[in-house]
Image (cartoon, rainbow, N blue to C red):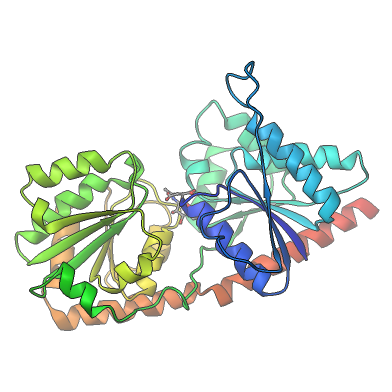
Length: 381
Ligand code: GMT
């Protein structure tokens, strides 16, 4: 198939899923065309089946707000026409699904009928989409897509709850490439971080408010008072300065390292004992899946789709949003007994294997084929 992928080319979860999906599809022999405003972060190598089409937005002085959505729609029209794509797969509803709708209408005037699949990732529905400013456009563009997927059952349910949706949504979970995300022996690195055999806790995110990164620090302060431990904070974003200050206020600064954005996150996860994700909202929790694939159990909130990934008492524990005491208590329970910790680590990997790329990729391929067939049938009827 010839597949167009539209996504945010950043370190955000939707961009990562879209890029990894595109790479896997290309490995399987499909031609994949990325249409984005920057080269996606993980697309920094050559493959004969991968193509990148940049969306350039002109900055005419009259434009206080450069019309990115129009530039994107025009680029989609261009790429679909000249590369003869079979399907457009857009990740994140805003503004990709509405731009795709516009592109689809324009292409119809050339006699080209391109099916559009929209994948909902989370904040496009739970935060941004539910904002009244965007609600009519999001509702319309979901309903007008030829196919819609959501990354968890919870996100699917939320979409029906928040919007007037008149069509089916298929759940296709986030996936993990176990060849990349697996436990790697990095003893020298572990010794440098925890020279006295301290337990290593880790958090990775984009440090947005929704991630409740200050809860991570508060939790760590409680754990650290009982268990010799270190905390690695990976990523960057608006909440980082507050977290750094909180570490000083709570007197744990010497045991916490802020590592900033990291490409080889699997190496950091490989030396970690426990992953913390106390998010306010989390449609699936890809970062937690990455940790589990590296044999790291998870202490998380029970927000959104997290209970579909993290299993209470098996791969970790889940507590209510903001229950820092409860999460810290459960973390200590896992960490204070080495045999128990080992069992949780094994369970985390076993669970991660259920989301193996090899299992999820065919679900996308089959869905593309189904939607392409349905679209053809509609045209000929
Ligand atoms: O929250 C992020 O880190 C970014 C965000 C996005 O849309 O780019 O991630 C969302 O999509 C991921 C991939 O599908 C999910 O695993 C995350 O749970 C989801 N984040 C939230 O719902 C807050």
